[in-house]
Length: 76
Image (cartoon, rainbow, N blue to C red; front, side, top):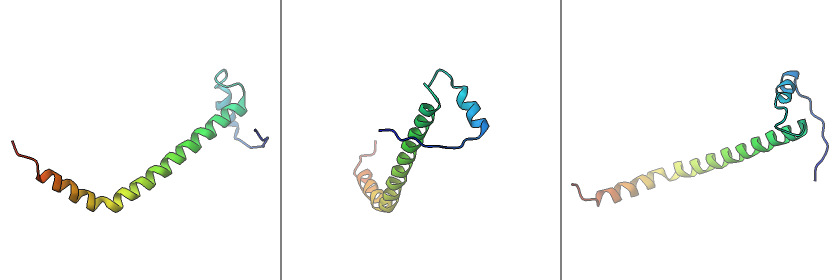
């Protein structure tokens, strides 16, 4: 389902949008695709930040485990 909304954009943005003629059916489609792309990017960034926080919290333990594993390797 789509809902109608009203937004205000600068003339520069509209001119740039209109230069994409042929890539989209209309301005609404172009703007919707841009917003969807932005939202996906934000979700990915937030997920990556959460993952990094978890890794940083567990870094010391993970590093100790890695050092232990490496200590079992035979030197050549």
